[in-house]
Length: 565
Image 1 (tube, helix red, strand yellow):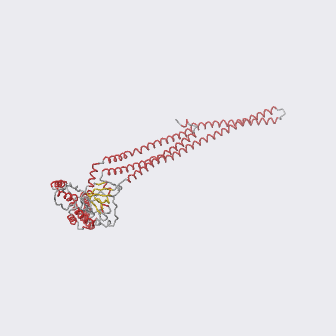
Image 2: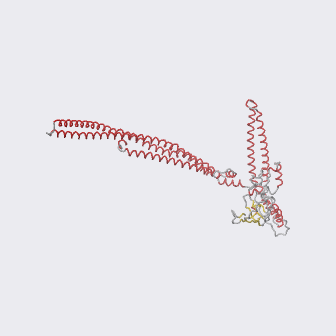
Image 3: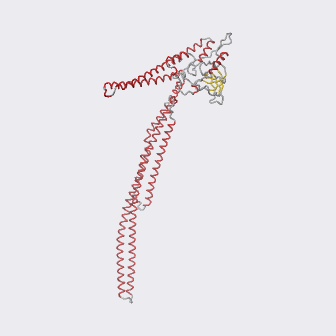
């Protein structure tokens, strides 16, 4: 249906309707703009969330990367970051494909609407002016007719009056004729202008106004069509990123499915396995037999000797690695670590050194080829200019090879000292064949033998280990850490519980304290996960003992209160 034919008399209502249409388009544009801002802010928040939970650049990051669930979470964070990027794409496309287009179209629409209604008002003003002129002609014709009628009546009255002179009658007659002529002229003008007005009015309501209203109808339909296109684009913008969003979600799902609990459990073993053997069985000692007892680890005299040995040591330096107060990375040979962990560290160091050697060799090969080119083509460069760099690389390779030799020696030493499963079985068989007294003494020794002391060395064959280190590294000061006396003057730690020695411990190494079986001691520092507990006998005697050698009773208000057995 056409606005021109159906709404010919609704100019004012059409003006209001088209203005409402423009305002509605502006409202929709504002809606899309706010949606774009929401997408931008959402993407920003998602990116910040992903960044917040990214692993920090520290040693903990390397440890976390070993576990499948940590790697899966990292993958999820990366996919979430890409997911946020797709919401940024949505915001950008909404701005470029809808907001910018509608803003430009609104300006054109307002200009076009203004032009059409200006033309309509002009046509209305013209027809209204013609109507006023027609009314003026009509009133003039009416007035002239009345004047002519009065003049005619006056003439007839004068003509009938016998007392009026003939000249007065003639004058009245002429006046009546003049008025009649004027009325006839007004009638002719009125008739002519009426015909003209009817033509203009017909053209106005059947041609001019319909054309203007048709243009307004076309403009309004284009506006409605444009808003429909924008609504479709609004949905398409989201639909376009769905494949990539789906890939992000698939990546998160795949990461979750890659988690392997068994593998992570195995990694715990790889990370914390010490390589030590557990203590052997405690054999029965028959005190009922009449025999001369020798001084053993459980005797009172030996306990007193142990106390005398530890009295001077407990005042000295304590092992700083347990308290983590040493800011360094430990000895170069990793002797502060248990055998299994030390072996892994040495192997990792060897891998790094071999990679560095390979890089240096690749650089040397490249420079050698360059020198050969310079020798064959002197105009390309001076061959001697490469020599200083080749010499430097050669020296670097020699240093790295020396480091490799040094770490290989330490690695071989660790592998030789690590017990094998066959050794364990043989040792268990040996326990079964020995007599009670001998077995009891060996068990006490074996319990102490596999543990590493706080300074990283073993409780036996210290001299041979030191000798091997000296042979590998001619400069022993570079691999032997020298600790300061930061523990000598520290304030006494508060007591957090008590413990009872389950086995005797001689405490040969610095930082340890000798204890006798059954002895009661105060606990001043819990086991930090390294297998050692810090205890105190009195104000002057304190040190570390193996956690497995004591039964710990922490106070109820101590942090993480629990009992170790």
